[in-house]
Length: 111
Length: 114
Image (cartoon, rainbow over all chains, first blue to last red):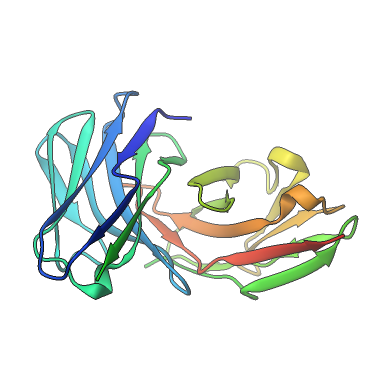
């Protein structure tokens, strides 16, 4: 357990509204990641961060932005939510050795 | 580029029977390989990992996996299924360098029949 919390855990929002998901870690891990999980696709990387203010795009970054102003927090923003962004979002951290540790997930529904 | 293929989106086994979940990968360099398990409405938990040491890797809950370079496979096995093994299982491959981005398979849902 890498001390990862995600908020909110569930959210329903309307198309066109902005949404921000928060990931908070207590282990001081340098790397943090946002994934989305969809049936038939597994998990796909949205964005990742390799330090404060250092971020880069993943496989499915269109429509998403991220920010990391503190080591412990990594925010994922949907500027204008669409129904195709209905998904379960997972945050993860990496210690720098092998595996990544995952948070409990946020279930987002865009109506 | 890395990619992972998991054969069989759903696998059913009887309690006490052998569990075999298949994973094949493609990678331009020797990879790190992982199996994660996801119980309903939970995050992902690491079962085991291959990091280029022993090719037979033992994990938690009695699971193990064997790295076979010639077959580009990393299949997950457990000799005797338990009801508590019912979950979704994901195979993943990572780059060894840079940001360690993970590439996941599409998952296999394991059902254990009493």
